[in-house]
Image 1 (cartoon, helix red, strand yellow):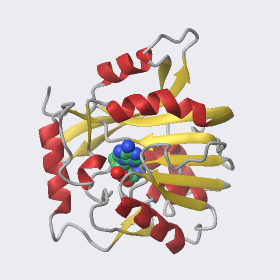
Image 2 (spheres, protein in one colour):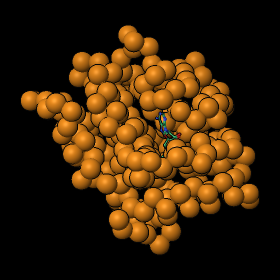
Image 3 (cartoon, rainbow, N blue to C red):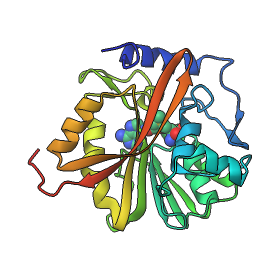
Image 4 (cartoon, helix red, strand yellow):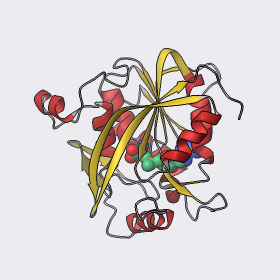
Length: 256
Ligand SMILES: C[S@@+](CC[C@H](N)C(=O)[O-])C[C@H]1O[C@@H](n2cnc3c(N)ncnc32)[C@H](O)[C@@H]1O
C-alpha cells in the first residue's frame, strides 16, 4: 500500500473534514451555493466533486462556453443530456442537482447515509429542481424500483480500499473507504442491469483506489472497464488522477 492508497490516511482525511470550523452551513461550488449538513461528504475539502462535474461535462454556473470546451477532454459527452440519470451516493447532491439543471428529465439520487439524502433533497429544493430530483435512502440500488431504468447510472465512489473486516466508525466514513471493495463488486455486477437500451454505467474512480483489484472484480463479474476521461488534480501536496470508467458487459461472462 502506498501513501496515496492508504485507508488510514483516508480515514484521517474523513475525521479532518468533520472538524468544527471546517464545515460552513453553505458553501459555493461551480458558481452555485449549496447547503451542507453534518456527517455528509463536503466537496469543499477535496476538489474531487468539482472535477467529477468536469469529467461528466456538467456545466458550472460560472463557466462560459469557451472555458467549458477547453476544460473537458474531447470526445463524447458521457451522459445523455436530456435523459434519465441515477446517481448512487449523492452526498450533498451537487452532481444530481447539476444534472437536473443541465437538462436531465429525471434524476434519482440515492445514498446509504440518511443525512446525505436530506442534504440532496434540500439542495434540489434550493435550486428549484425538486420536481425532477428524487432523493432516496438505500444501499446502492435498494431504493430503485424494480421497473426503473436509466440512461446513465453513475457513482463517484468511496474508492479507497479498506481491510475486509474494517467497521465504519461513522456514516461520514462511508464516503471515503470501501472494506474489501464489497460495494464496488456489487456496483460492477448490478449497474449495467439498471440501464435503458444504449444507456451508460459509469464509475468515478481514482489513483487512490486499487485498480488491479477493481479490474479483477470486474472480470469475475463479467464486466469490462473502459476509461472515458481522466483528469489530474492536486489534493494537499499530492497529485492524484481521477478516471471516469464506463462499465460494459463482457462478451463471455465468467462465473463469480
Ligand atoms: C466520494 S462520496 C461522493 C458524494 C457526492 N456524489 C459528491 O460527489 O460530492 C461517496 C458517496 O457514496 C455514498 N455511499 C457509500 N456506500 C454507499 C452504498 N452502499 N450505497 C449508497 N451510497 C453509498 C457515501 O455515503 C457518499 O455520499
